[in-house]
Length: 306
Image (cartoon, rainbow, N blue to C red):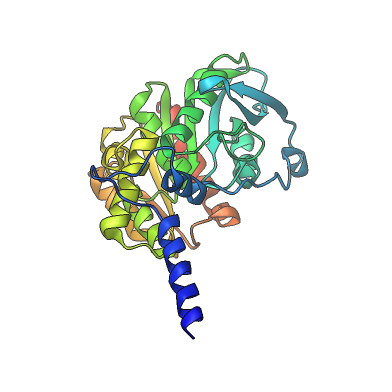
């Protein structure tokens, strides 16, 4: 019995050593075991593409886009159906997903006359890897895609929109505060504040918020180079100048529907909510709402024709 208790004590010590440890400034030791622990736990699962635009009867070009730090993004480009330059929509997936999971949104956009770009964010799909991914890096990758679209003769560079899901939606709102060329944003399942997601993640890791959880959140903000309070959709949405549509599942357990209502309130009613009978991953549930989403984009990009 004594040996069993001693082994248990040793195991408890090892578990405590493997967990993040706060330093005097409230952060974590950079480059140490705790730092690696955080990056490992936050790393997104990389999924392979399970289908392509061709599976939907769409002709697409596979392209590589050069992004920050010399990295490259994989993307599909679906040209518009007409002969002249077409308005374009960039579709950005969410955390742990890839471009293939955004394909259900392409047919109604293409049928309405839009060109569509579907990139994989860094650390996702077939794009290059990084030490870590983050919402600001998603926003950088959105910018890379928009810059590429602006250089295409088949695209009307004055009519660009972004549709993003979850982290991709939050990144689209962030990008729209940084760029003048985003004419509309459709947010799919955006969370209100990343700190709230972090608290839920910490709970899943069996870590108390104080002091370890707070230290982890503090360290993550240092690593990504941004304060949660600055990049939260609650903070960015009021600064976005283009029209925004908030599409949100009524049964979302990752970002509750109340998040969409809080975002609408933060926009002073400028960003209406379109409720969907779905959870966090809207997928095929968007079908009945395709006309409303396309109508919103057309009214934003062609206001005189609306």
